[in-house]
Image (cartoon, rainbow, N blue to C red):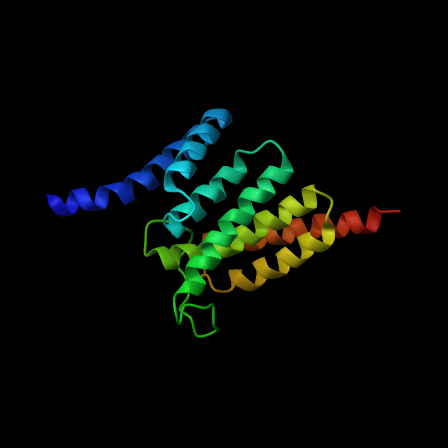
Length: 178
């Protein structure tokens, strides 16, 4: 029973993030943003990197202003990179094992690695929305490179397709610019 209580706070954070995500997907963007904001302040700047990355990743989606969305996506990336680089031997070297499909409940390092392609893709989309195509292309290159660390599956293919769509959009914009 005591071990269960010790695990609950960590599980509770992910549950609360999930509840906010459900609110957002159901159309209550403002309440989702309010809950995620309160949880962000509760976790604090030195809180669990996996929680901060996950929360910031989804908080970005609740923003109305593209600059705010970029800020949150950059916070998510910063948390993920800080977590990965703090641990010796956890870089994304070619010999690193493939990461299972999609971010989700598993070891935080594995889940954070699964976030990298999505984080870079989201940041690229943010830069594209802010009319910063060079920055968007740089992030797309990072997204393409990090998607190769994922195991084959729907999540990996979905990310590749989204990367290709954004690349086509950026290329189309470049061709039509006077």
